[in-house]
Each structure stands twice: as C-alpha cells, then as structure tokens.
Image (cartoon, rainbow, N blue to C red):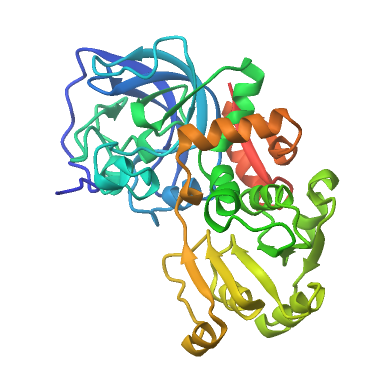
Length: 390
C-alpha cells in the first residue's frame, strides 16, 4: 500500500461538487487561515460544521514537518461540531447531530473487531494518508487549485467545515457550549485518562506518579484520583506550568518540581513519598524524553509498571534489563490510552457531569482567528490546553 505524502505539483481542476471554507494550512514556514475547497462527502465520509478545535502538540509537530503527514496540510485532530452532510454509506450519524471527533479506524481488521481500534491495522493510511481512502486520494485543494493533505487523524478539523471519516465521529447530546468543551476530548484527554482507566487500572491504595503537567498528564492525574490511590504525585520541571494548574485538580496530589534534578535524584525523592518507601506501583510518562523515562523506571517498586504515553521519534529506552528481570517490572506504551472513542468519550463526559473529571478546568478558549495568539500563550507557559471556538 502506498501513502501519498509528497503532493503532485500540477494544479487541479476546480471540483464540480464542492464546499468552500476557511482552514488553517501549514506550509512548513507558515501557518495561515486560507480559503480551501473540499470535495463533497462520498461513501463513509461526512461534512461537519466545526464549533471548536482544540490544539494538541501533534498539530505543532505536523506544522513543522516533523510528523508522518507533511505540509502543505490542514491541521487539527481534536474538534467537535454538527453534521452538515453525509455520504451514502454513513449510518451512524445524520445531518444535525452533534459529534466529537477523534482518530479514524477501519472497523474491519482483526484488531478493530476485537475492540482494539487504537491499533487498527489500517491506522496509518486512514489517519496520515492525506486524503480519500487509505491511498491518499485528493479531497481538498487551495484557492489556486493546488492539492494539499487533509484528513489528518481522519478529520483535519482546524477548519470552519471539515471533511471527516465516519469512524472519527462520536455522537453526543449536549448544548453548543458543552460541545465546544468536548472538542478537547478526542486525543490528548482520552489518552491521559485511558492510561489509567483502560491500561494500568490501579487498585485502590496504589502509589502513582504522573510525569508531565500538560493536558495529557492532567487528564491522567484526574483519572488517577478516581482510583483512591494511597500516594499520587505530579512531576514537572516548570514552575510556571505547575503554578497555573487549578487547585481543584491538585487537591489530594503531591507536587514535585524537578528543576535541576537528575533522574536518580528524582527517583529517590519519589520513593520517599510512598507509604512503603520502596517506590511507585505505576509511573505514567506523559513527556517522552529519555531522562523522564529513566526516572520513571528507577522510581518503581517491585512488580511496578511504567507506561509511556508521550514520546519523541528520536527518544530511546534506557532502562537496564536486570532491573526488569529481578524486579518483575513492566514497561509498555499506549496509543490513545487504548481508548475506543465511542465508549471512552461518553464515559468521560458522564464523569465530568458528575463532577468527577474536571477537564474543563485546564481549557482556555480563543477565537478561531486567534491561532497564533493561542500558540504564543501556550509556548509562553500561560495556557495548558487552548481551544479555538467558532
């Protein structure tokens, strides 16, 4: 199977049946709101009028050209909106339905059929192929008729209107204001929460450390509080980030600022915080750099588990085999927190409505036209999770 990441230079004829809209287009050295033109939905595709698009670090990496899908491309893979039109094969939603958007999957491979959609055998093509089907067939062009990549994570939703795969949709019932908040649930938040609720599933009385005070880490932290841990610690090396985390989220949490500390010192300090003094039962790494991975490994008690949630393409695992062997340790990764979106997102919404999962506490809203401001505020450490609202 071929994936079309390098786009043809020839211009395309204007689509006969199309929808024009504005979208944020990454071109390597620029990121601008441009007029684009989508094909009308076919098969299991649909058009969604976006009400909010959440900004994730993966969007930033993609805009810089360091992701699997390359510019020129339309960004966005956490969003929500109302269905405008559907292809003939769509059966899950109808025009007017409210939907939260998440990753795409085929629904037909052995992993999808066994409830392991985050590990779909067609994941790469459907989420990073750049266009229609898994072969990257064109779905969108710019105002000059030049093709660009779309359907990032099955959606490319940083747009006023998005062409979306049906499998990316999670149908919800809510107000428009609630739907704008729910836009953040489709990737980072369900990943962090799923790391706890779906993957590690800590027993009551466990000792848990979360590395990273971003949206993924705070979602994991909020989920971990639901498990009645004996010890729950949040680790970050940014005083500014730790200072802006809402007090409600940090209630019952020990906070550790690791600025200037070695992985060995961090691990020793974490062990001292546990009831036994022997170490953590679970270490959730929401950062993904090598020093954090090492600290997470070293802080574990025997039979402990390190779960890698965040990561860099160049980062390497450095824990020694001996520690795993003698200590009975487990190290694994997770994509999307092993979340089946149509199960996980409604579950998180129900927890939020019950006052048990306050993810909205770390969201900051910006106007749709204020993407650069949202990026600047995030890079300056003044915002945890920005959302562009329409």
